[in-house]
Length: 498
Ligand code: NAD
Image 1: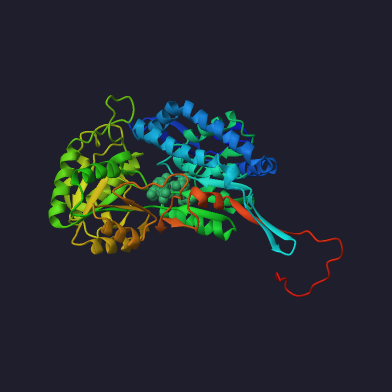
Image 2: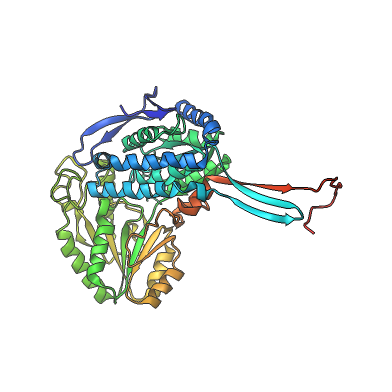
């Protein structure tokens, strides 16, 4: 049974609600996870609140030293952790390792906290008056995370929350909960005191308790847009600071001058890597000009013939793409394929025909390619979150820009071109938070901020980078007078600096 980690101990729950955790490659039940009650979630929050009283007084240098040790421990255990991700999520082993390494980059950034949290100082803001601003921790912060990055997304959040002096309650996805406990164990091994980092397994009941509980100061959420919107509005209503990252529909614009072999490789990785279960996956290829579109579709269908689909582990050479996370999600993706057919898109390659799809117990689908997709179709408008790529044909760069800007999501996008002016026009005009030029998945490095625009992010601050430090701290500004000997006279007017 997969339980909680609270106050430095692994705990089971009294809840009668359990969820199945499956291996997506085989369909077998690996274990069950407890879905904690509101009371159990509240206990974890209270433990974190107690721990805050001492953790917030640990010096930034000593907090950062614990994170340095944690980073070394994750690196030592990289293969074990990556295997665990593959077994519970389905993504291929090298991809699982990749997400751990991207998560560790945030840890590396957070190790610089003595510098990042220095605050500001102004001498002589008035006669014999100095001012300094301090970046203070908030208290108990919570993270609510999705299934698709069981390591990286929590690591976008807790390294900076802990480094800045907060304590943390993580509510991971119930689909792949085990990794969160391994991370808790490694943090403990690195010397993190009890109660500073806690894990509560659960579903809506736990999430609601986090949103309602008065001791929770900030909530960092990543998941689908309807839940992100709910978490943002509810958490804000209860007076919490919230950042809530939601869904996506990422477009890659292909100009006629682009290198189409590079484009094909970029699209194969970005659309079908991790079975399309990435918030930065490319799900729409917007091709400028019919001639270019014909070539892109031909090259993609040839490449799709060679896409190796199968279990993410124990294969030599490794497969390119694993299964979908659950049977339910596989069926949902398959129903989008059906809807595309019914709405008149040209189905070039049907992932439902893959030899492993619906024939093994694993939740497999092959890669799917649609051509002649239009903006009124459901497969264009909605996030499918599976290995389905839609080709939309347009006649100019401006038409491509207008199409992308009209979409409700604005997480990531990219343009492939050799023309500098065209790339500049695109990056200037596009209403999207993360933009790549000849880079299909422009995930910013840890020292920059990660986040989308429009309905891909609710709240003013993005993840990690300078925004991450700001999100987990609040300013306190102290103004100090150093008077000469003698009295300072009473002054009844608004103080101004003369
Ligand atoms: P999800 O919204 O179903 O779940 C996310 C979290 O919310 C989980 O911890 C889950 O337990 C909880 N949750 C689910 N239903 C809830 C409810 N009714 N009330 C309260 N909490 C609830 O998302 P998912 O399927 O796990 O993840 C996939 C989604 O995450 C996709 O939409 C993807 O685009 C998005 N995502 C976005 C980013 C980003 O950076 N924008 C990154 C990764 C994933």
